[in-house]
Picture (cartoon, rainbow, N blue to C red):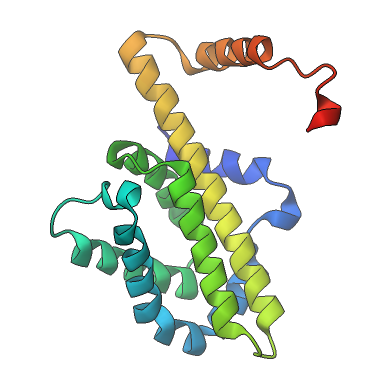
Length: 192
């Protein structure tokens, strides 16, 4: 799997207005002195939430929380300080296959990205740049979610190829046709 290509494809599929931009990185970095002191509270709340819910708690091994908290702290430092380059986005594409291995579902991942945005919204409430900072984090988490979930999808396709011998393009075509048979859209588009 070429993680750079996975990230590039995921970002390319996103409408440009929804993607994380250089100006979003500047906004986040400009507020580093307000964001970074929140890291401890964010990390503790993040893992408290995961460990309080049985399905998300089940993805962790006994005693690994300190290691995961350290990783999240390092990630937050990278989010705030950058660089937000190809290497950063390729690393995010790698997170998708890691989630497959760890049995972290995309709903789990997307919910926690939303948690990050809500945390920032609450902490910046009343701040003069609340909208600017929140929008930067919304585009950041949308981009993270797109890359990670697409990396997850590609990992599944490649694993299926390795197990069954079906090339990913063939799997995609077969799944598309089967879904079309299972869920025909004619006459139903108005219902959705």
